[in-house]
Length: 507
Ligand code: BES
Ligand code: MN
Ligand code: ZN
Image (tube, rainbow, N blue to C red):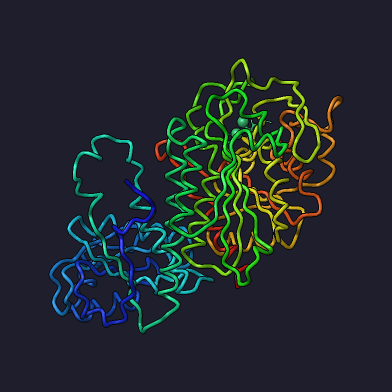
C-alpha cells in the first residue's frame, strides 16, 4: 500500500566525473538546435565518438522525449548511456523538463535500477539548478505513482515493477548544498502530493468523512501535529447550521477536522496561516441531483481537504518555521427523505441566513462555517481550497487554478508561488458588483447566482461574505485537482503552490 512515505525511489547528488560513475545508466541531454550538452560531449569524447556515430546514423536527432540507449561504451564505468532528446533549447520550459525526465525513466530499460541524470545542464530559462533538482524528483515520483491499493491482483502478487527500487542521482560539477536542498524539497512535496492523490482517488465508500478524520489523526501522530475531530453533536453546538444542512441526507456521520502545525518560534500558536479545505467525500448534488454521466468523479470533491492534509505533510517534513492551521468540513451530499430541499433556509455559524436554492451548491455551505470557525485562531491569512464550481472548469480548463482574493498582496504572493512551483493559477475577480446576484427575498443571501453567469465568481463572492476584514484567498481547483478521461485520477495540485507559498512565508 502506498502510504506516501515511499522509499522505493531514492535521490542523491553525485559530484564526480561522469566517466567514474558506476550506475546502470547515465542520462545525458542533447538539444535539437544547440546539440550536445557538456556531459554528452564528454561521453562522446571518452567513448571515441559513440554519440556522433549515433547521430550520423540518423538514430538521434534530439527530438524532445526521444531516448537512445548506448551500451558497453569504452572509457566509461557505466553500463548504459541514455542520450535524451531535449527538443529545441529555445522552447525548453517547465513542462518540457518534466516530460524529458519521464521519457528518460521509461527509455532507460527495465534492468536499470540506478540512474544518474546529468540534468543540471538541461537549462530552463529563468530557473536555477535547484529548481531542476526539485523538478527532477517531482517528475520521477509522478511517473512512478500508481493507485492500485484496491486491485486484488497487485496486492496478491509480490509484483516486480512496483517493488522495483530505483536510485536516482543528479550529476553535479561540484558539491552544491542547493542541489541537495532541491532534492529534499522535491521529496517532501512529492510525499504531500501522493497523500493528496491517494485520498482523491479512493472511492466514496472508502474515503468517508470518518476516514478523512482517521487520516488526519495518523498525520498528527506521525508528524507531531495537534488534531481535533468534532462529531455531529459538536458541530451543531458550534452553530454550524449551514454545514449541517449539507450532511442531512447522508447516513455517513460528518466530521469537522482541525489540525495545527506549530513550526514558528514561541510557545503560543500565533499568526498561523489557515488552510480550509472542502471535504465533500461524495457530491451527488443532493435533491438538486446531478446528471448521471461521470458522476463517479464527484468522489474527488474532497480534494480541497486532501490538499490541506498533503500540504501539512510537506510542511512538517520540511520543518518550516511557520504556524499553520488546517480546517476540513467533511461530509457527503446525498438526497434522501431527510435531505435539505431547495428553498430551505439555514443559519450559518456567522449568524447570516442562507436560502438554499440549489442543494448542489453545497461546497460554499460547508466552507462558510469553516471560514467563520477558523477566525478564532486570528490567522495571518486564510486560504480556502475547493473543487467549488463547474464554471471554473469552463473558464480555465485543467491548466490554471482559479485564484480569488480581496487582498492584492496575498494574491500576488500566491501567483508568484504558483509560477515558482510550476503549479499555475490565474487571478479572477471578486468585485462587489457581482454580489447583487446573491440577493434573496427571504434570507440574507441565496446560495447561487444567475444561471450561466460568472458562476465561479459568484461562488467566491458568497465566501467573501464570511471573511470580511480578513486577509483571504480562495483557490477553485475544480479543473486542476484531477484529470478525467484515460489518465483519470487526482493530480496532487495545488500542494506544490501552497508549499511554495508557505516556504516563502516561513523565510
Ligand atoms: N463539486 C461541484 C463542482 C464541480 C463540478 C467540480 C464539476 C468539478 C467538476 C460543486 O459542488 C457544484 O456542484 N457546483 C455547482 C454550482 C451550481 C449549482 C451553482 C456547479 O458548478 O454546477
Ligand atoms: Mn455540488
Ligand atoms: Zn461539490
